[in-house]
Amino acid sequence: MHPVITEPMFYVFAVPAVILLGLSKGGFQGLGTATTPMLALYMPPLEAAALILPVLMTQDAIAVWWYRHDWDAWNLKVMLPGAIVGMCLAWALAAQITEDHIRLIVGIIGVVFCIHAFSRRGVVEPKKPKAASGVFWGGMSGFTSFMSQAGGPPFQVHILPQRMDKLILVGTSTMFFAVVNAFKIVPYFALGQFSAKNFTTSLLLLPVAIISNFAGIWLVQKTPTGIFYKIAYVLVFLISLALLWRASRAIL
Image (cartoon, rainbow, N blue to C red; front, side, top):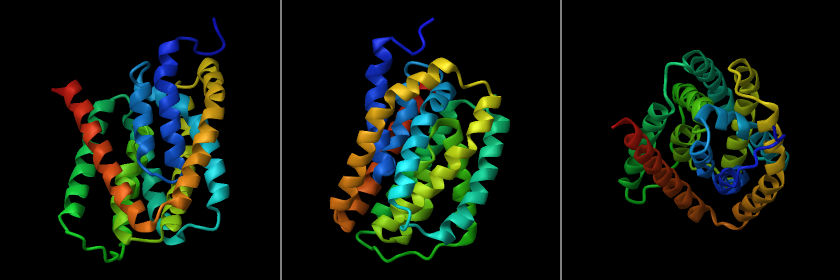
């Protein structure tokens, strides 16, 4: 047996997926949501999520170091406890809930959130966050991230309306998902989703992941704050539509 995945079709999906993930970890949140669905065209979704986890954690380490001074402690304090509960629930229900149902839920959340934001017609005043909102959306993000690496849209529902500085926003997201991804290691092992072959394949993808990560960091630095927020909302909307489309094709 080969020590790595050698089928060319896998890399047709994996390389673009890792590039999107790197740009997402660099600061363009949401792009990474497409990673697991793309890999799921080749392998079971939960196995795809486990395969990409070492790549995620390497990119997390780079992003955490880069944004180590730019993050909001209050949001992490209220969102991370919810995320841990959400991941524990996802672990318990992993055998009962399909990936497509998760995609459907995340897609609906993202589309409704963006339609509400777009309907405000240019109103951009920061919205003061509530602890209950942070716990709930943190839980949703942890749950959907565990199941299919689709934690971005629920996280953005709580974070984007605060209109915080773009680097603080990116840094807070970086710290949140670094902790979430670290908590996935034991459950993924327990569910039997790791293998030596998949881990070696993850290592093979690391150079692409690191280059795209720094590309994302560079792009965030160069993008004006107003444009950055517009891009963030549009990305959440488009990715949510893609999740809805994929889920509806499988369920209906």
